[in-house]
Amino acid sequence: MKDSEGRLSENILYFARALRAAGLPVGPGAVLDALEALSVARIGNRDDFYWTLHAVFVKKREHSMVFDQAFHIFFQRRGYLDKLIASLLPASLPGVPELPPPAARRIHDALFAGIARKDEHTVTEVDARLSVSDQEVLQKKDFAQMTAAEIAAAKNAMAKLILPVDPVRTRRHSVKGRGHMVDIRRTLRASLRTGAAVIDLKFLGPREARPPIVALLDISGSMSQYTRVLLHFLHALTEREKRVSTFLFGTRLTNVTRSIRQRDADEALAACSAHVVDWSGGTRIASSLREFNKSWSRRVLAQGAVVLLITDGLERDADDTLAFEMDRLHRSSRRLIWLNPLLRFAGFEARAKGVRTMLPHVDELRPIHNLESVAGLVQALSGAPVAGRNPKILLRQTA
Image (cartoon, rainbow, N blue to C red; front, side, top):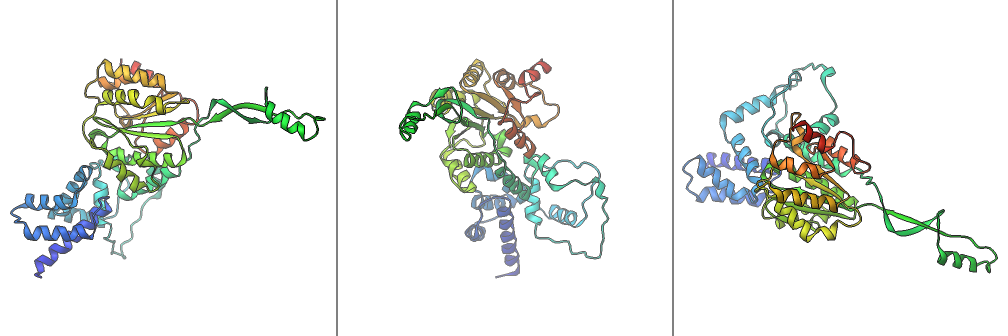
């Protein structure tokens, strides 16, 4: 093999390893297929090279953006050298750097993770008074700006969250030490042991149970940076709670409750992706809610279910149908909590028509963009709505 072909093979191999570290399912077979495709295809320009590798390495629509950013970082000579020099320089603490585009940090860390700092004689003094712990930074960092390692740490942190859901009273009764209702059957059985000489009263009381949780997750293109991380949270929630129903919606509604119950998180997400055909597409909240209210509400909204509506509210057709379906969903659930990633912006206002249409029909409006907001959601599910999360206040502020 010629020297140029050897360098090309090494570059393709290293590029494939970077894609795998960034989350794409790229194995040795894909590397061999890419080398064979480049050898048989007539590569005339950069676009031909790009789309040849794209056809081999990209198997799902959501992987296309990651591949595109990795390609332009890796195969652009000047950009590659600039990032290599930047990776050798010490990181400066003062100042607030401009946020990179989503997933770019993850691609950069995947490409340059194996490059070590070899300058052992240079000593960099850093003022530790300006630094904070990694855990605190991770709690407040946006999911869309996390690296691959930070996303993995966030998934582990979400799996460890304890969910003490506020219990509700049911119509059934259970054994109680004290109460106002006598359990006749257990009382008579206990009295037979002593020949009815002593009657030990047994009591019944109302039984408490954890309410079901129903999650409606928006998987449209505007929510693509948060969908997979939030699916990991719902997977961890499903493992801890028995009665959790998960639905995904974009242009249509898909029930993925059985798929997300698999023990392995990656297998569960792969099964969910296999059942969904409208991933990263448009948004039709009204039609999706209408299908849920018509086909699933009576099955999963029993016994005071808590509904988690996870969407940015950017509805394509915000009309009276959306208001009617939101009101119907609100009346059928014990609590309707709207989780909106757009609340991460300090100056967020309810200007969009879809947002203003949905706000009057929810009990609580919360952000869902980092670990801190997920932990706040867990606390909110174990008690009454938190003051300051009333959606009517946001409507009055933007009136």
